[in-house]
Amino acid sequence: MYKGFVKRVLDWVLSLIGFCVLLPFFIVLTILLSIANKGTPFFFQKRPGRNGKPFYVIKFKTMRDAFDALGNELPDDQRLTGIGKWVRSTSLDEIPQLISVLKGDMSLVGPRPLLMEYVTLYSEEQKQRHEVRPGITGWAQINGRNAISWKQKFEYDVWYVKNISFQLDLKILWTTIIKVFKAEGISGQGVATAEKFNGTN
Image (cartoon, rainbow, N blue to C red):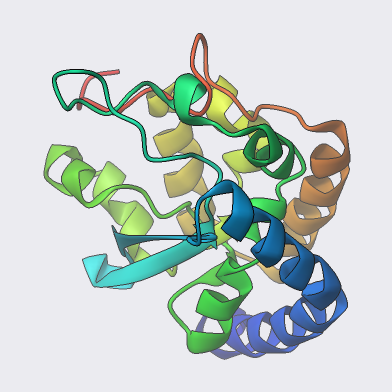
């Protein structure tokens, strides 16, 4: 009952309330990031959703488009803008994803939507993360976020899929709020965000 219907209703209601409350931040950040990123405040990228169906995730753009002499994209920590670093540390870059929750592409709580290129690298166990809608936050996020290994992230994601409940989602949301204020686990070891998944790490 909860997993199939109630969770979706709560997602829609809470996302609508959340977006209305955060609307002033949304407007101000859109203006500031438009200036910092030369007119492009939003970041769009195709990600796998429930059952692997692709959708476009939307976030505030925290990194500038910058390349080296050979045309290769510079590392994340070199592309992160000053305001982008602050927006990322406060998790305000996630605000636009409330739109994805309202549309039904995402949930407030669930495994984070990763890159399309990772799908073919998943084991059969890891593929179970796509049995539910991806989330803005999740069990892996409150247990280390980008500071833990990919192996741990996938184990947390699959555990969540097998144990979804109202109580668990409530715990994850509350813990997420606390961790946002503490700015924990935002960066991986030696990188500004997280290292890429290669199927073995």
